[in-house]
Image (cartoon, rainbow, N blue to C red; front, side):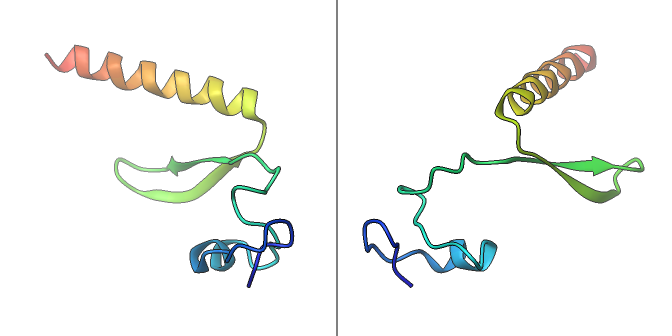
Length: 76
């Protein structure tokens, strides 16, 4: 399938992830979403949370980065 804006081929992976898409990633105006695994046990992931708001996504990214750094610092 080709992009309706630039006529480039839309990659198979994008079509698989977004079956209804009509635009390639270059032409798309939709910003990327942020997804994170929700841990329900010590090492069990039960669901994925998708965050569409770019401001909230950035805040969560920064928080998770700070938590990882803090965790590494405590292990030393």
